[in-house]
Picture 1 (cartoon, one colour):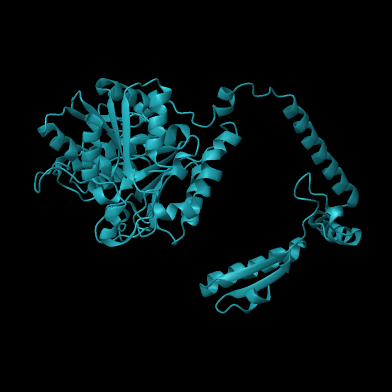
Picture 2 (cartoon, rainbow, N blue to C red):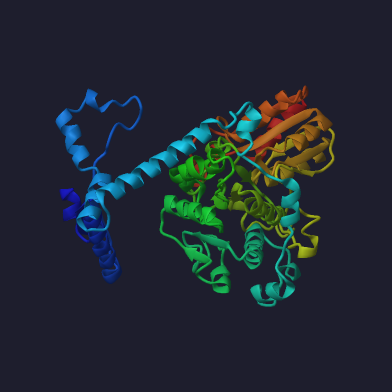
Length: 502
């Protein structure tokens, strides 16, 4: 600890962690230093580890009896008991009686637990993983604040009265509506408050709803998701933002090992509801490189029970975000909301100025009819020759490719999965069987990407038609135009479609 004690700019405090009184006094001094000087402190509490860390860890195999006895003499429980007796706050007999009562209580609970019924099927084991109630979600999702509250939240300019919106604008207005109707909802992350996010998605929310509900965090994804964990179990509704998909990986265990498992290990007694917004995928111009263009989602799809929403269009984003918030609120669902960066400000679909990627903001009166259940896809076109299955940036590329294929005489339909977990299996199989030719346009990687799971699901469901896939390469995404060499393109989708149809 000499290195920590000499570290410039950080005041060092040390105490015997086995001595409750000393540890408390020194901790108080450390806190006072931080608050008074507005600078960090290093608190070092020395303690002991009693017994092995597992049943197979027999200390006597690698430690001497003298070492073991020395640690036992520093047992914090015994030293605290001695401290209470010395202070006249308790007697030895009183402490022993309290100890025995606590031991009997623990043993009684253990006996009761041992008599509990054993889990007898995979269904019982998995029941607490994703206890969603679609009917309740559909009922809660369309909830909006009162007209007067909405008028105030939007400063008299309701979004349904505005022009058609981009993806970014649509998410912004949906978050505002959610903040207005859910008093316990918070939005936080790197630069989301005063600045309004790197891409302006949260712009203006802090000014309207206050820094207590929309606020900036430190540049630490583990801390961001850790805060969401604490808010979730405290019955708040956290909506943390991870600035880029690549930044999520260093904090993924906060979701994998904590949030998504809490309901499972507690049999549903506790949950960590949250909707994690993530700016993701590739194709953004002028701001490239792996850390700002990441197409790796396999680690997310591997987490049981996790909901992964992947909206491509503005209207889908609004409805799907409301669905995720309702799922988190009603069933404690952990949702990841993947937002395609390259589509945030996209306005056109086929030609410059056509406004084909804009969409009007639906008024609350239409939220029920436009509700998007978890695991439901969206279909475009009614062609009978080819089904292109895709998501995210692939939706826009596939729609453009489908128009050119249609001009050549092929009847195409495009299926936007919208949900990467759970996959929309019924919609997928129905769209596949309508044409008998399925091309999966997957912007994620060839290995560990989404397309592998789609192919497996089609085969497991008994699909007997043709299926092919075209993906991005198994590569990190380089800077500049070099990215075009490894990312899925419209031309590759067209070529793969002609090959499948030919």
